Amino acid sequence: MGALLKLIDAVLFVFFMVIALAAPLIDAQTCLPLSLFPDLLLDLKNWYAREYGDYLIAEKPDFFVGIVWLELFFQWPLALLNLYAILARKPWFNTTCLIYGASCLTSMVTILSELIGSHKASDKLLMMYFPFLGFGVLAILRGLMPHSGRTTSTIGKRPLLARDMAGEWVETKVAVVVVPEARSLGFDYLAADWVGNEWVWMWVWLDGLVGVARRISGCSLLKDECGCG
Image 1 (tube, helix red, strand yellow):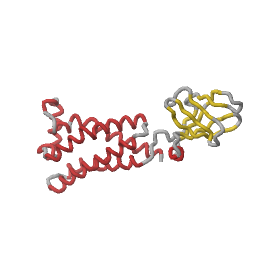
Image 2 (cartoon, helix red, strand yellow):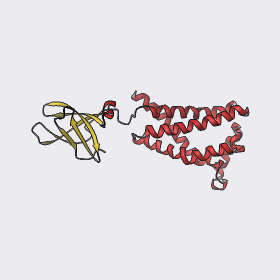
Image 3 (spheres, one colour):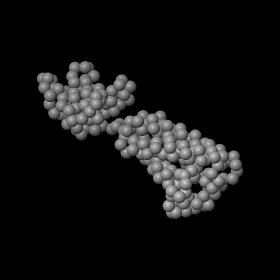
Image 4 (cartoon, helix red, strand yellow):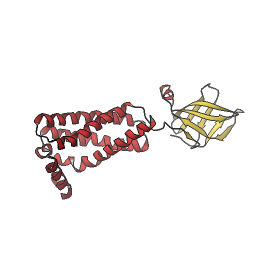
């Protein structure tokens, strides 16, 4: 499951990067004054319109201009947020990805309905838009999947102070694992630590910059004094 999520995230990252660049540089020419853009970008847009026969860009119907405005003020910022979320493995990526996917899918259905219904679009032009329809569907599905930011175990990455069996704080290393059961119970991690002479499993949650954990049996506490937020 982890490998599949990483593959999906890689595909989405490429699409989000395309949107992050194309929206302000190419698509924005549909609704903003052309004097704002250099000749190179104007020539690139005109070449695309001629090469693929994209009459929507050439004729600029009102509904298409509205979709471009939506892209610039709503979808483009979300695309930037999603790029950051993928790179930083943010837990809110599912939410922003789902929102973007729903908006993108709605826009693409509208555009493709016009292209197919008008009988003016070539197969070449349709093949340019269909991948973005699939992109919207993939973004929605990814938004419905569990977050993969910390699904692997990390051992010894943070020095911790743990209370040993004698009641004193000692430096130790902790193996941290994220499991669905932890999140459903209101915790952030499931951690395993060598305390005293035994391995102890503990539920861990974050409290500001301090990570706090307790044994599942409720007998001990563990605190991260170096900040694990």
